[in-house]
Length: 425
Image (cartoon, rainbow, N blue to C red; front, side):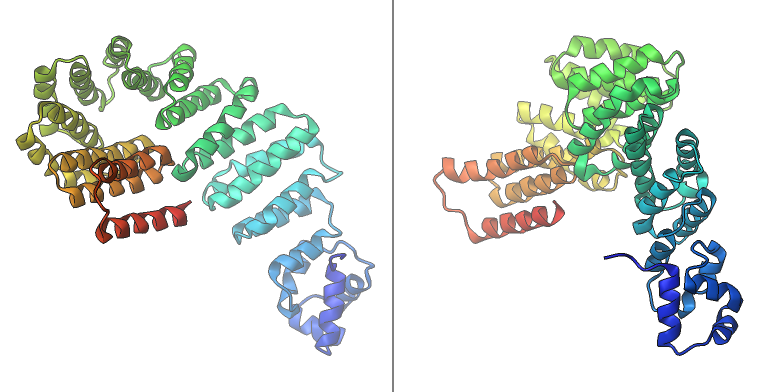
């Protein structure tokens, strides 16, 4: 079905309301001559400022009026004016249609149109709008650039789109795959953009536990960044941590040493924590505990969660119940930490898993169930569903191994968590 033009809408509205052109002129402030030409179709492309003056008499949604105007409009300047209007009003449903029509305008060269739209999407005015609008713009730019064979704007638009989407912790695996695809266009990005892309992807890989990917991506940053930037420092730390979690403590120490030479505020504390953690993994338990206890007494920010987990593991190995009970007192402080990264959320989830292991060891089954299910929900927040299922299996394995019947309390708890997981996915 063909969409109504502005002339169609004007004619239908005027007749349905029994209005003459003179009465319509009084109501809108638009001259009757102009109105007559629009209605008759003589003026197929009225000025947008005229169209904005007459919606009050139309029984149509604003979006439909704009759609009707677009039926006839092909002038790039008018289309750009419409785009600015609908973005200010946050009509995201129209953004893709208007921006695509702007790119297709016959009086604008493809490369110039892409450059202008990209500049607009990347401007401060757009930065203040919601992410849905920005994503719509970058999506149109990338798709149209791909159709026209303009790799520079494929690369730039996909990169900007990725930087927004990667912050959705519930879709980390999918967004990482999207980010990886940009690497094939990396040569069309500026040197600074390439460094930032590899760093962001490296951290993304680290958050997903893809440590080999993280090492490869962050080593690219170290190679390309000739400065002592914060990005280079944090890439060095990401490599150090990736080797640590991969079990290669020698290389972890090597990159920790490189990281220690940076002068950023977080370096000294982080180095001390990692030295204690590495000693623990290498079997120097007493030294590790001493180092980590000293770190815990002066811990700031997100480090507290990591320190507690490292000590928790060491205390479980030595069956130091008294020290574990003291460690549990930090839980309230940990819950109040402003967690900014998915990996730190994973560490919080891991704390509750360790707590579940401890409570299970003591035979406090209901407390263990609570902790395991809390861990499951925390893992779900960062798409770490497999680790969440492992926690549920810890509960099921207990009842299976000990041939015990699961009571209503446990069944009800599992059912509630299951329902929460279904809603969140």
